[in-house]
Length: 283
Image (cartoon, rainbow, N blue to C red; front, side, top):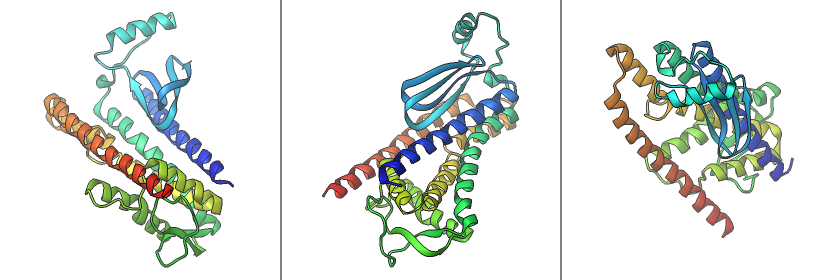
């Protein structure tokens, strides 16, 4: 497989993960009684838009992300418009009227789907006995355009312990460096990650699966952290609502602003890491 084919595979696979994320949330939300308004796989300009079972399903140009939107208590105008488009009344259930456990299930199932896909990808190299992907400065570098320092392949079969070490030395290490403001020298962001997976695919499909799998596991677990704007933050506020009998509106608004600021700073670090990595690659 060529590097370009590996990059294309990575983008398609990531879009599939995002589709699994939003569709799983929509299914669980509908099962819990909420009414889905729209689903989006990706962000940016809409490439495809279709009405499916009364839901506006969109595929956008940028595959890095997506969202599931349910009707809420403040969506009166949206409800009216939707009913006129459908040509028939619908039983609209605002998301905030769904029981707390139902809303918690919605926030939990998306990251869970990402983790399960990651575990499946990481399991295949172990199952077939493929060479173990490792981070080891003493082994020869096998890949060009690599956004993870010393990422290579050891000549022994993959194991679950080996995949765990790979997770610790790549996804988890990058996360720790980012949030603790340690140096990201030699590391890349999303663009470099895509390039690295393209390079891994040149070695073998199993190497690509290992790298993609541990990354998806990390992304799913990170989304469950108790940080506002992440799903884990929503779960914390639902726990507070369950304890107090009402939603902590002021705390929610304030914490959301802090969560957005934190997310913007972290994304800025990731983008800067990509810029520096690309600059060093050119030089």
